[in-house]
Length: 387
Picture 1 (cartoon, helix red, strand yellow):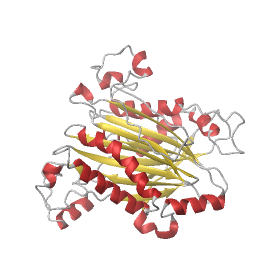
Picture 2: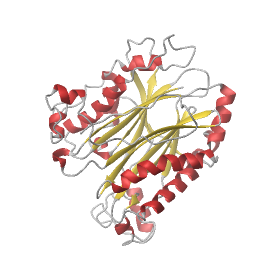
Picture 3: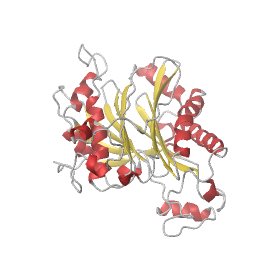
C-alpha cells in the first residue's frame, strides 16, 4: 500500500499536531497506470516504476557530501534554543517556508503489516514558526512506532517552547516516550529520526538506523529549471551494533556484540525493546539520541533552499546520497516549486505552490529502492525548505 501527506508552509495556530501516515490508502498513480487497481496484495516489486536492479541516471558530476556537526561540538556556532533562533530571525528578517509530503510502500510479499510511521507537524513559539518532520521504523509489530509517532511531536514541542536547548529537549522527549512505552509494549521497539526546521537551521535527533539527509539546492533562475543539488549533508549517523563506535560504547556499558547484534537486536539505540533491555546492562541499548545541526546557508539576505529527506532503512540500505541527488536532478519540475516558495520579493506574484513534484520525488525514492531489491517497508518523507 502507499500514501502521501503534506502540510502547508504557514501555521494557522500555535498548536502542533502530528500527522500519522495511513497504511492502507489507495494505490499511487504510478501503480494505477500499471493496472494494479485496489488489490492490497500486489507485490511492492510489481509496483515499482523502475526496473529491478536499475541504477539512477549517471551523474554528470559527483555531488559533494559531508556530515552535520554534533550540537555538543558546535557550541555558539548555531542557535541553542528556539529563543536564540527567534532572536536571529528578528535581527535579520529571515522567513522560513516548508512544504512536506511522503510516500510509503509495504514490505515485499506482505510478510507483516507496515511498521514504518511518519511525523509531519508544524507549530509556533511567539512569532517563530517551526516544523517537526521525521520517520520511525518499528519492529516486532508497529505498536512502538505508532505510539511514538503520536507522542513525540507534541512532547518535543513542549520542551522546545520552554526554551530548553535542542539536545536537552530531544533527550527528555525520548525518555518520556520510553517511559510511556513501558506501559503498553514488551518486545515491540522502534528506531526514530526526528528533525526540527526553524529559521535557517535544521536539527536532527536520531536513534537507530533511519536516516536524514539535507540536499542543498541552487536557487533556479526560472520555473522551467533545472533543479541542481550543490551538496548533500548527512543529518544523522546510523546506530547499529556493528558500527565500530557503537561496539565501543556497548562494551563500555558492559554489553556484548555477537554477529553485529545485541541479543539478536541490530539497531543499538531504540525506544522500546524491553525484552532485550532487561537481558543486558542498563544503557547497552541506549535511548540517548545524537543531535546534529546544519545551517541552510551563510547568514545574510540571499535566499537559500534545500530538500530534507528522511527515510527508513528499507530505502537507505540500497540508495546512496548520490542516487538521491540524481533523482532530484531528474525531476526538473521541482524548480517550479522552488520558485513558488521563494521569499518576497523574489517569488512571482501568484505565489501558489503545487507540491505534486515533491510527491513524485518521494515516490521515486521509494520505488527506486524497491527496484534496487529492498524487501523491507520503504518510507520517505521529503520537505522543501526555503528561507
